[in-house]
Length: 148
Image (cartoon, rainbow, N blue to C red; front, top):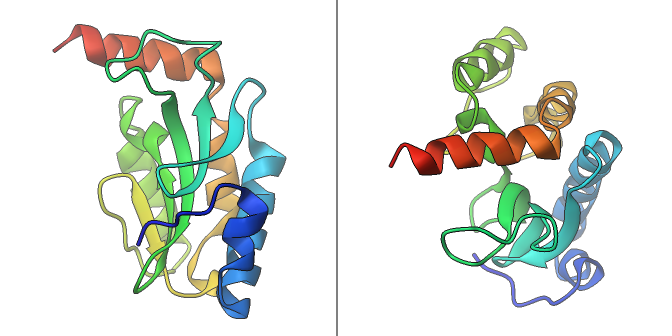
């Protein structure tokens, strides 16, 4: 479910109250842990945390590198974490730490789905966001791109 909102405030205003509260809380955790150099914008129909093109313009599609995203979907909400697939072993560590919380593990290709805020291990989300400085994220992107 893509939003046509052009600002984060507009995106949040369009959400039902329960989802707005959950998304706002996850957003606060992301912002509190977001390494310097990433920017928060509306992109791809969701709240996106990305490497600005001014920082790294050499992308395969000429669009900013998406680091993380936050969205309200039709049947759930989702946090997108590109970094868990960008660094060797990160996905396995993330899964192990997530499962250790006892919360239901519902993860697709970089998306962590949740129906209510209590389903999401916010501390782990914050740690995962904080663990990838922009320079390291760009290096991982370049390494992956060079291997293709």
